[in-house]
Length: 217
Image (tube, rainbow, N blue to C red):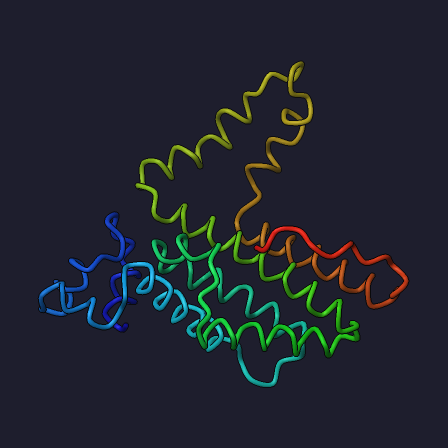
């Protein structure tokens, strides 16, 4: 597992493979599969280890809001630092101790904020899915070749700044603001929107709860 995390931190284009692990460990790559049923099992195990790492970055003694914000930022940072695995597991359920620890931390923190039980579960899923989606996007971007990243970054300054104001008046008016909005600002805004929703729900429990059902994220 430690070797797999080291490989994941390098963002290798071939990702986390039995061959890469064998090279890292100085062992035959077939030996890896004595410990994991298949590559997906290995991926989920390493992904769960990333969640353990993220939860370990949350300082003791924080209030519920501070814990949740620290956890959200830690997940994004860890996934981005281990981009291949982060991008691959963002939409998965690892079912391991790391995931259980994060869910427990989130449920406990939301319960301290005055939400009813049904809302604790619902807003935990809202925050988890939102943060994982954003962390997965950041991780996926980190895996891209440097020249691709540079071209995407330049697009905000070149293509968007030169948008036809007659055809795209809103873009033309706000192009400087779009170019100035960085990843930290996006995450801050995501958390801001989450807290607005939680505060509104805590103040007014009469807000109708959406019908149950829908896809399993």
